[in-house]
Length: 406
Image 1: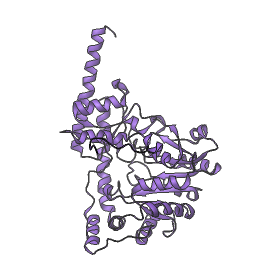
Image 2: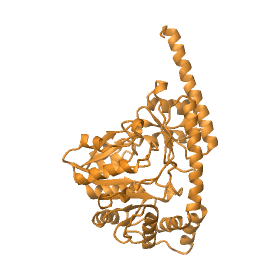
Image 3: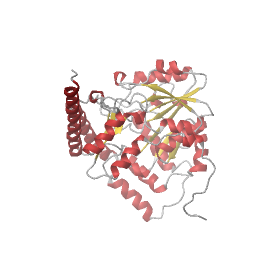
Image 4: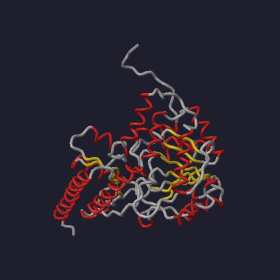
């Protein structure tokens, strides 16, 4: 057999071949092969997981705790999650029937979609949004129905926008506040209106609240805490962002018993359970991680102000994000589209950002800049971005002088 000749295989699934690659990872992969790059690209804390959390995982390994757990996850951890949510938001979940430990929030999102969607069911997705939202709906056989939001409304969706796209096939509303990529939060009043709308039309709400502890202005609104929400809400959260545990891949889902039981069926056949060492570490995070969390939040808040002030100072209009760790400046003034801006900035000034187009409608005139990096890196990045913007101004002036335009 000719080793150079690849065998002809059956075709791949159309739902997969039709999915675009992640717009975040493309720029991350390019930057990883370059020297002297300042990355404002991937949304990952630059802090190491706090020592006591790491130590708990080491302890579990040293004592041979390397077995499967219940499909639902360690009951001790689920009980701690229930107590955590109760303490923060005064919402009560039964750890035995309403909480599932997942392999990151990403798995929780996938399980939620596959549990509630029949082929052709529609899900409203406000954009700009996290890059996985629409693909997870599509892979579950659903149809994402996007609604464009803008900085003028703090990137918050309204019931009127949902009503404008509603059809008899609408099954759910998928939201994520604080938002990736915009850093926007939503008010209690605005979210209650969405819950009321979901009640009137018998819709599920899937709420991704992975950034709930990273809020700098006002309060985080836990959707399940609102009147009439808990019985129709799938609440997704985890440990990646708040406790700098991205690589541990421990998340959780809270939902009504019938919904959670459906999610566990899929989880049991595909993942079985989350790794026990990670679950032990997550338990330690809930018990003793808040001091480290507070320190990290304080630093993120400082970085937030530095990056937003810096971006505005170089002529890139940027609203002040209330949560998460992303700035979402406008680049309209440069005359470049988001893809071109991000690509040229990377190659000409060695700064990695993500084009807003990666996050859907409403992102075309923006780039996403993560401030989950040091203030020194942020200041150096702003200096380089400023130099890039100035070079565009000089080029524009030269063009006008050549063409004689005003």
